[in-house]
Amino acid sequence: MIAIIDYKMGNLRSVENALHRLGAEYTVTADHDTIRRADHVLLPGVGNCAEAMANLRAAALPDVIRQLRQPVLGICVGMQVLCRHTEEGNADCLGIFDAHVRRFPDSAEHKVPHVGWNTIANLEKGLFKGMKGGTFVYFVHSYYAGLCPDTVATTRHGLMFSSALKYENFYGTQFHPEKSGDAGETILSNFLSL
Image (cartoon, rainbow, N blue to C red; front, side, top):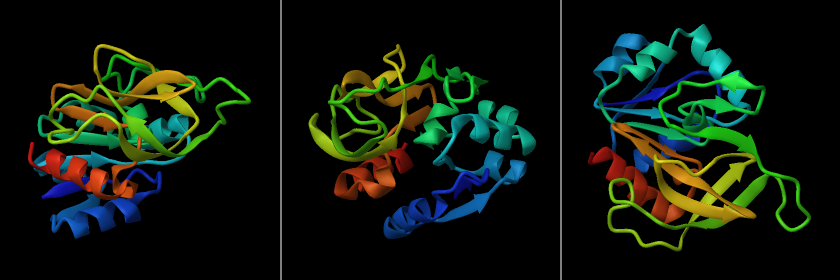
């Protein structure tokens, strides 16, 4: 069973639809015991990272998440909350990934937010088994995680940033695999096979 953590940050329906297409069994929950018992855990999210952290704290979820030993995948804001700190609201995050989340600089050439299809490169196995660099995936974000020892995929939007992170059993994608067509389904399938 897959637990999709519900911490009031939206995007649950598209994640549910993607899992349904894959024929996966899942439940949407904030219940600590259900999350701990799950085979895989998804932490999706859209919106403000500081608000996301406040919601996780209100539901007493930070320690539950940090102690998980099964595969965990954070998506978009769900990846950002797994980092050390975010400039968005100047908030401390869960500190699993050794990365800091910063706002893209304003630029005439590279609009903020970064919205639409872009490529991922420097792919490491695991989430990206059977995939090649240059694959297009779908992004919607104004803040990014910088390059760090946990980077397992990169993307350029003016500057190079971490489009995916991994530390032990924790994975994160800045892009939305559930909105990334066949490539996204491959990534989710790879995650569910971990």
